[in-house]
Image (cartoon, rainbow, N blue to C red; front, side, top):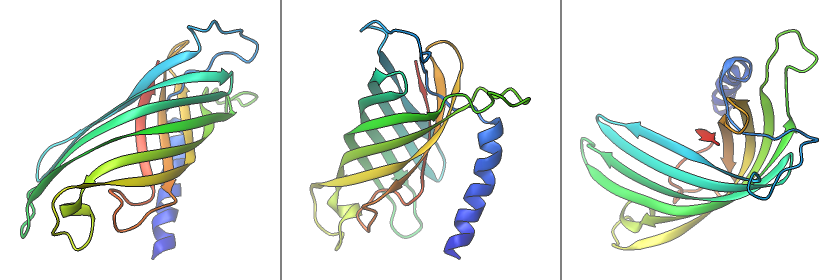
Amino acid sequence: MKWRKYKILFAFMIPALLLASALFAQPGEDEELSPKDRFFFGGNFSLMFGYITNVEVSPLVGYYIAPRLAAGAGVRFEFYKDKGYYYPYQTTIYGGNIFTRYLLIKNLGEGMIIGLNTGIFAQVEYELLSLEKEYFEPPYTEDGRFLDHAVLVGGGITQPVGRRSAFLITVLYNLNEGIRSPYSNPIIRVGFVF
């Protein structure tokens, strides 16, 4: 059963790799960057309304250490409301992260006749989130908040949409996944940088 979930995930990732837009602005290998051009900004934003309402805003700022290597930090705020049949609830999640990205393949279509300009990157991230004990920490009866530490590893694809902007699709795995984690593996994010 568990392997079936991963087979389905990979079945969707292959077309996404070939067709989807993912983002990461990458300067040229031989291009010398000014200190100002080494900085990039971006993030993730999501909205979902209905039986479950989920609003997330996750801006980030990063720095190109080298043309293929970038590091950065971001903040995250999420509002979550579930109108559950037995136990409706709402909560807020907030915190921050630091990450490092390395561009493994800058242009997947180089040398191919299909002309893709999509890149593939690897990413390591440390995330620290503040969660409500009532919803995330057993026995789920205490008030207050606690900090959840997560080490996320994975990668994704990037699709430039200009000289300094790109879309990203990132798939990460939480190495500290447990009952207190606010999400389960894999974690899929869609974002933008400029």
